[in-house]
Image 1 (cartoon, rainbow, N blue to C red):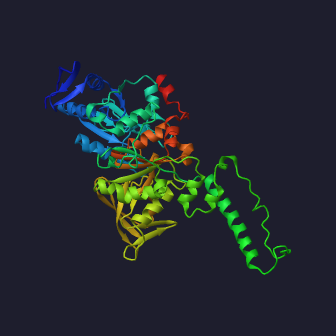
Image 2: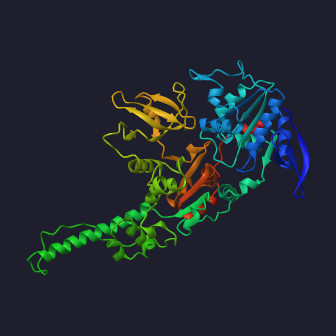
Length: 514
């Protein structure tokens, strides 16, 4: 296969065309390709829509035309599968590439990989231990390319490998900044770049402009609120006092005694009726609150301001919105699409635990005709979306793999799960099922290295200790066709303006420099 560049002019600027695949490349892309293929070890970085995939594809084809043996790898199964789909070559997880067996990797310094060129994607996920094992298995003759976005969340494990290598200034780093024409039409990509530079995006609401659904916009914001713990305590306190005083008054009226006689049998509630309204709730109309008939009315009564497009005006809470998006609204406009809720936290009303139980009960409730397995306080039913929580090399399933329960055997408490994206089926014995969680909602950290057709991101001030720019940036860039924020624009602004300044204590940069 012939491969070459030819210089041409487009709209008054220089660009390069790859004759083999009829691709038009910018000067920065062309320079990156030429630089990378000439380096023993290099890094390719850039945000979404900047052409990292295009460059990777061309590099692979070029190397193959030179009869080079190329290995493709990524930290997670979904990332490896995406690499395979786009490039057309087999890509493996790092664990499979290094042949993990009996608690160790078979590939190492003594038994290195048999390849001329190694390309590793999603390197922001690499922790120190895995990166060390990988590089130990690289033969001296092999060239290495790390690809990743250092602005995403760092690895769950120890270290900050990609950023440390870049900051060492000892490894050639090729950074792509230009957003290309096709990507410029994507609001997901444009909003992600705005967030990455600290600018809060102006995202449209379907309650303000309902036609946004028909327009197939790829990003929207549904304004809503959820009561905080402090608000709930205030509501419960007011309601409790109101119930106590109302009950006592009804009792006194219903008796035949004169209201001026001593009521020696009356219940005494020490301190319960002594209540001063906190300053932050001084705006609350207590009469409206005590007469509220449901949770929505209670929340409306205590909120100082309600967004004009808030779902509360339609009688829908944040949880109601999440359910309707997942089970009704999105399926109506996007047929047969994988929907994933990505939330900052596990705890709270909008954390993974509560959201998974809520979505499961609405979408896949208990039925006598449907088998289920109960493990502790977890209920797994046929048709449930589940995630594997740790690497299991015997099953060939790894941390973060997501699938659907196809069959459940209630006699031996086993099940068969079909995993995305290749639909491979794995049988789980009873002892293996403890490694599963429901996956209608997962944390943004768990989503690293994955892409989903449609993503729903709840963002509220109750998540304040997790609201960081790189968290929201990572969550948004997981979406391919549609991203829906649900919550408070104030919370989004807090996250965009809040950079995670926590420094990981590593010595990798200094070791590379010295």
